[in-house]
Length: 138
Image 1 (cartoon, rainbow, N blue to C red):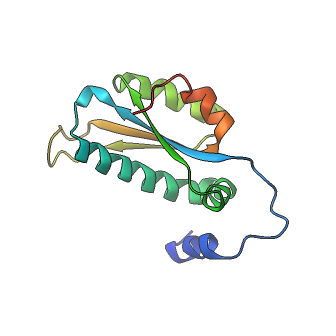
Image 2 (image 1 turned 45 degrees about the vertical axis):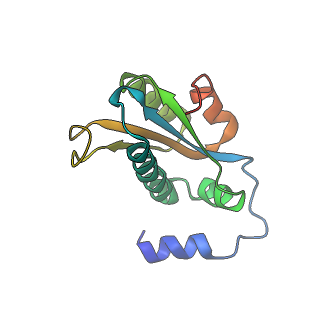
């Protein structure tokens, strides 16, 4: 799907008989072992949110539309290190949840290729809570 088609889908009126998918959210899991500064964390979470949104726009458009219509809820949680990312990705894929992993380019504080943030969703709150509900808020 091209960017124009994608943007049109997002801005077009919602169909009257669109089925309710329930409450939706986007969860960003931040790798704490990298000791990123606040600005770096904010930038990496921004990359994760935009990437997840764009990816899910083509793979899970109904969830994206429901998420946009309900206020685009986002939360950030902590992961002690990137080893947890693999487990979270596997759980998400088993449940059909969209996943977006950000790897740093290495231009500033941390080495290139470092896994900084894992974004899960947008998807149903209840399903995401089964994957990330035990992680502490950032």
